Image (cartoon, rainbow, N blue to C red; front, side, top):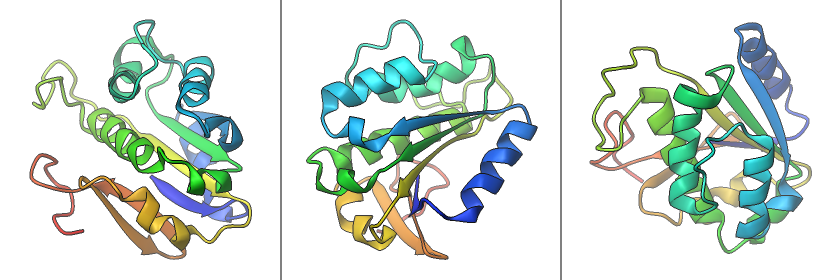
Length: 176
């Protein structure tokens, strides 16, 4: 997960590289993600999730992973969340970031439901989520985005990155 300014030229360049490689870019409006119900509805509507998506946090993490292997026309995906500033005050921000990190980790590494490498799929798929901020400094999201003990954040080149940490996430940073 990355929090960056909406005018960061890096975003357009990376999105174009993903498209050029056959990937997809989906844009969501962060103002629609301020309540869990509308967040789930936006993901169901805009992101090509499996039919079994049941509009809850666990299902969102699983569906982001499963989208790659079963439903989507393309495996690689970037979700750009525009106007993400108001999410700073959302009670569910830390949980949302943790769920996105888990979904991306599973999709990128092709991990099955038991946490083992899925031997039926040898190819790793990209799943990136970028929070595009109109006015807020990305660093302001550091604390609220990392309320889950499994999320590690770091400010790199003016962008806040969030990823999984801990023993259960192989190859993840080990310190918060």
